[in-house]
Image (cartoon, rainbow, N blue to C red; front, top):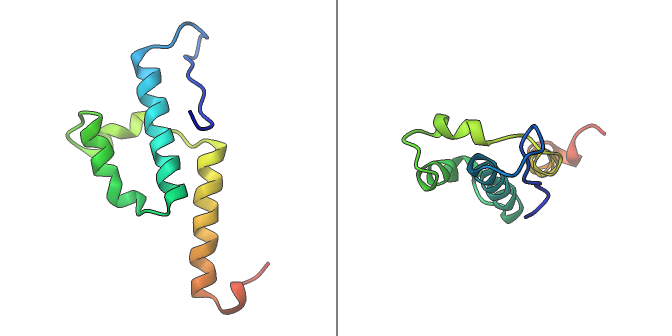
Length: 89
């Protein structure tokens, strides 16, 4: 898996919840790297995980260093499009 480690807080064997968490975070990371509209895809992730609402999926999502890096990269790309010269350094 990309950047995610499957573990539980007490370092015991992985639980089903741990696999679902790792899958959800990895899927978000891949969507960011593919350049797709992540917000538009969240309902698909929720459905895949068997949730009726996107808010039910939030328990599986965690900001990892890799995910934050991708979000930061996308934000800076967005700002460069808005501000001539790329904005302040």
